[in-house]
Image 1 (tube, rainbow, N blue to C red):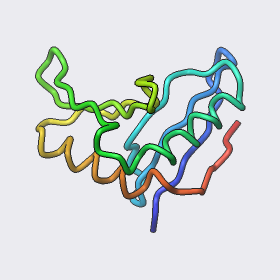
Image 2: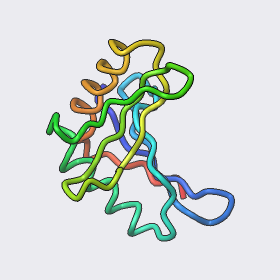
Image 3: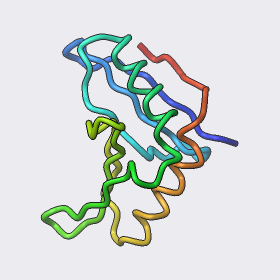
Image 4: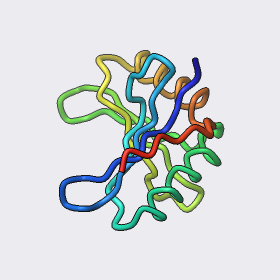
Length: 110
């Protein structure tokens, strides 16, 4: 089963999306958007940018955990991964984003 996006509304009325892998694990989480169309544009940006390796910013958090940001062509962060125990696990998360990020399935949970 391939991945999908879930579009949610937060308790304060803002919108966010997550990219899920085929096993329902969350791969990527967006920032909060003030409007639903803005969040939908964020999903479109993931779909457009997920296959380009140069769009991934590989980072290490202060606690030593590895994570990544997916960035648009304008260098704005589109989404951030979970924290991974190792760089290898983070790289697997990037590979999963490349595989699942082009999904056109959007589950609107708003």
